[in-house]
Image (cartoon, rainbow, N blue to C red; front, side, top):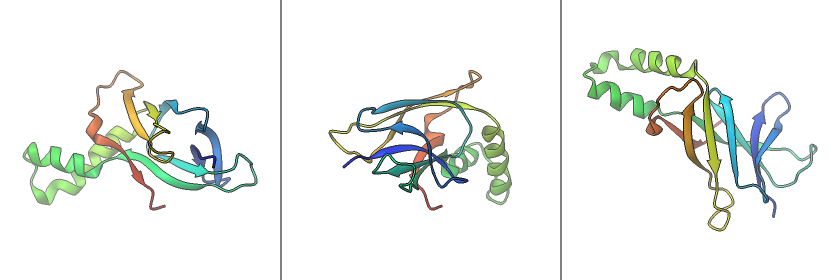
Amino acid sequence: MLIMFGNYNPMFKNIDTIYLSPEKNEYEIKNASLPIFLAMKQVNSINYPSKPLYQINFSRDYFRSKLLKDGVAEKHLEPRIEEELVSYRNRNYNFRLVRDISISKEEIKIENIEGAKQIKFFRQAIGIDINSY
């Protein structure tokens, strides 16, 4: 069974760029902003639909912990988390996606994250989650 992952285009409800395929198990996404929706399909045909399965996005929990550690009061957390997220969403990043097909066809990992403008960023702040779209 073929399993391909790629960028989900909501306008076409399909993958517009294939990132991972049975022949390709790593891909570098360059100069992208978040969130990124990854869709999966089993047949490489424009007529075969895809569904957004994963989302690469910032972790609200990471920013919550960071701000609490920095001494931000609980009542001020939500607006501060939003400020942080807006700040980071306005930047572009490079991501290297990988999968070990001998272990799992569906498990994708982010091997590397770089700020496109040389921004040092903590790996814990970005993750791949199951999409609830």
